[in-house]
Image 1: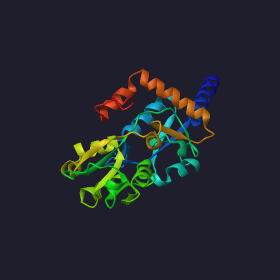
Image 2: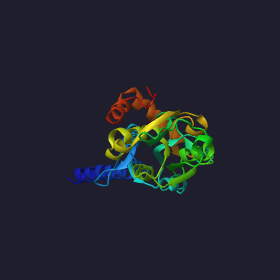
Image 3: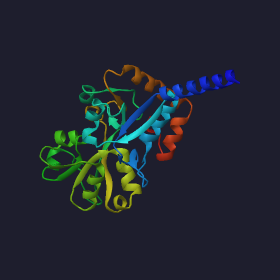
Image 4: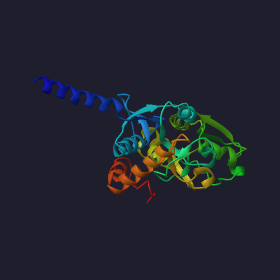
Length: 258
């Protein structure tokens, strides 16, 4: 009897130690960029970015929690170790590489213009946009684009993409520049977007602004974590998990944009 009790105690202690030592990682996302990341009515974070992140964690056999962080502070939050990775539709750019390390792209990216229906805008030069009010989300490559390409416009920057959309729907903007898929989602599925606005012009694919695609950011010293994520990304592409998540949100494969 004493031997059995001792054996059971040893097993219980072993299980507790295993549980205590299980690796837990934290994902930081914006929570205000549907359909990629958003807060559900319950307050839970959801969206393509979140689902991809949780699928990667499952492949890496780690526990993960997801936390929301305002976009302007999302890289500083990573550097301050508030979370271990950023999965928030962040374009891979040379400027950001000075601050973080990126995984392989987990989807491709392009930007686009949106305008009120019937605006008739066809000249996308600085001269053509001079004096027009153009909106974009602050701290983004879209904001960098409008500042560089349309310096003679009246540029308005907003903390979130939802606030850009709201001002456009309320007639306060002549034009906005945003990430193509969220803007397409807004003008085709959102009641305000469908009523007011449309995408115009050609997709913006200049790599100076859209970079090499969209990646997961980790701290520069976390090379082992970056490689684990890269392998997990290959695994979810190979076993069909990525495609199932993709089909939940989009009608095209955002990994290839086809």
